[in-house]
Length: 166
Image (cartoon, rainbow, N blue to C red; front, side, top):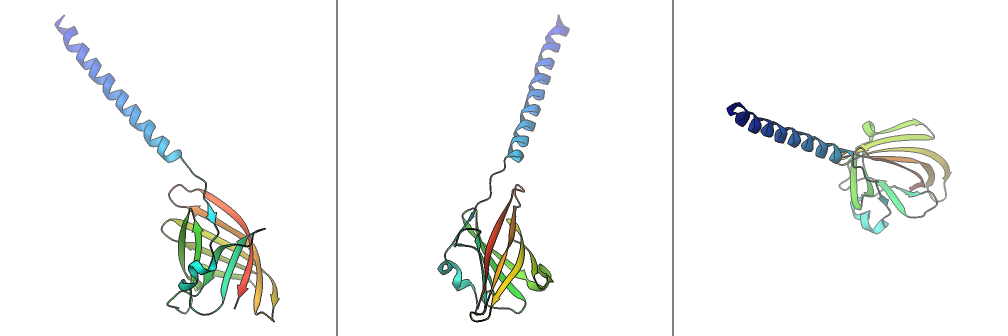
């Protein structure tokens, strides 16, 4: 009988510890499995023009829309070989500072690839160069923007149209 009095509390204690461990493992799996869709919103030129220096500005819109989703130009203060890319992702303006020699590669005269990142996102821009318009000093662009959110590895790809205006 004394063995039974000792054995019952030990079994009860082991059962409680086992339940707690299993419950904690379930919570951590649930937290890592949740992914949300990345949103890319448009924004007006006037919201970001004070961030660019003088010179040409690249502006891209979602295909079929006429609102900026990405703008690129020389940052303020302007530095040679550096660009500033701006997007509105998940409701906030995101800035991507680029070292043009490292981050932006001209594959050929009609194809440019840019790989950008900040603390929250990685962005890959594949740009095809279209027609040039000498009278307005502008060039037509089209391609794809791929965005990856670092915290949960969610990904979205967007087809764009736009171009360079000087």
